[in-house]
Image (cartoon, rainbow, N blue to C red; front, side, top):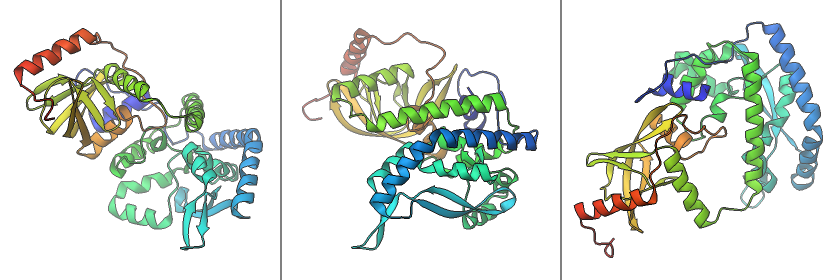
Length: 353
């Protein structure tokens, strides 16, 4: 998929990976008038389909936080022309300390992405496209253009209601990595069938996110089972100066290995598509639990932070697929053997840990 191509071309390739390919779709329309008609028609269809839902959100916001249902903000678009951006107002003024605070519905709209639905009006007006770089404020555009001359390439196309950086990267991904992806897409032509298929994937992802927000939390036993399944699906291995070890379970910010490993710098190697990726991390040992060493891990650079947030912590909207190649999974017996070997190589005082 194209999301794996981004990691190959921008982040770099490790291990056995496929040949380089170009993105299948970008931001530059081959026929601007036809692309404008396509966005207008699609924007009208989606607006009509979602009008009852948007009206319901507007009514609840009107009753709970006053008449200001829509937030109007100034942004710059194609050719750095200013326009008014619409979105649902999701904050209210706290009269006690005069600060803005999000409402309960506002938090839900932000988590599910429904807060941006009024931007369909911008698509219909011609200020934006459905897919494109995110619109920015004029002050931000001026600062970033002075810092990076390539930043201005985003103003050669219209901004978008949805951006690739929104769906394949987490909010914590560094701006340098996001700028590299945006720069490449601003020099890649639009492929309408691929773009439409991408929209369907994004719509399904938003639907799953909406269900996830309303669903109760996972039980601890189910959480551990999911952490173990993720580690084995990714064929995750930990590399340290002491050696290379299999990872037993992977959770957000935590990993478990049956070997006794000291903290410090290391690498996490994992399978993505038909190849491997490697993220630089810093390990901090937390505890020794049920024969497993538990570590907290953090990325040490922007590229590794993207790989960790997307593939290991699963923090992006579009989730990565499972590896297309398979390595035999480690059975419980193999983990017990690995643990037994580690215990005999390095004696461990469990009570003290």
